[in-house]
Amino acid sequence: KKLAINKDKILDAKDNPIKLEDILERDDVYFNLESMQFINKSEDVVVVADVHEFIYGMYKTVLAQIETPQGEEGTPFEETVQLIFNLLLDKCNVSSGKTFVSSSNQSKVEVDLVAEEDNVLIIAECKDKGRYYNPKAGVERVKNDVIGSGESQIIKSRKTLLDKGGIVRMESGLSFSNYKKDVNYIIPLVIHSLEYVFPSYEMSDAKEFAGDQYGVHHFSLEGLYIALFTCGNVDNLLNYLKFRKKYIDFHKSQLFGTIFIDELDICTSFIGGGG
View 1 (cartoon, one colour):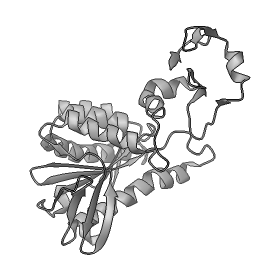
View 2 (tube, rainbow, N blue to C red; view 1 turned 90 degrees about the horizontal axis):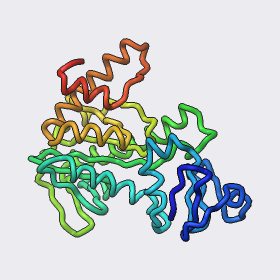
View 3 (cartoon, rainbow, N blue to C red; view 1 turned 30 degrees about the vertical axis):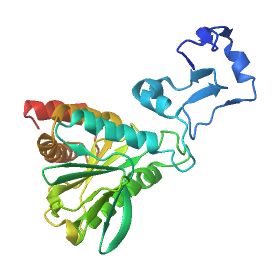
View 4 (cartoon, rainbow, N blue to C red; view 1 turned 135 degrees about the vertical axis):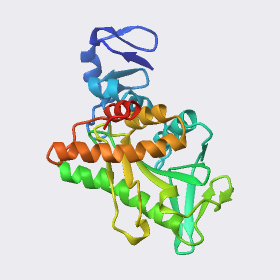
């Protein structure tokens, strides 16, 4: 495929110039805001339709080009999250492929990421929803469908791991249960491909989570990369999540419950020891 950043320099696979008007007149062109952020012409040319989306969320354009079986559309994004954990967290064992958790009270539940170090389990739900996944949706619906659904799924996984008989099973057949069944040793995250997810966390009133110091933290993929790059290991990440929670609370208190910060703001303050 050829990538064009200038409408006057769109080339086919043989480097022959193509006019934008020719592409837009063809029947095999599609431009569906609900699922794509670019125009795709046959197998030869990709024309970016949303420059911001391409620059800030360039990985989406790349991941969307990976062919996946029906029902597995989120797999490239999940594998990207696993790769980032592998690359950026030192001495951390990260599951690859499909991973399931189960217990004596709960049949198996799929978890998109399990990363383990020194009895600490970091578990994550990956939500691969684009900015235009539903252009008619209001703010509350987006919050419920994107943020809320990911949170409810990861809470279920966390409860399962805290249950008696909780166990982690890999697609490869390997399994383990010798982790610490303590709320502050099972850390839940929700990772979004939607980059307009501001740093946030939610606490639960469920009795299983009494004494929880972390809550459920939500990250965009860009924000996750910045945070993991900053932390470098699990111990630093745990300290960062506690700091992140306080930082978010402070800024919400100053801005009438709203938040206009990004992950870089939090990381910069974390490194500098500020608040």
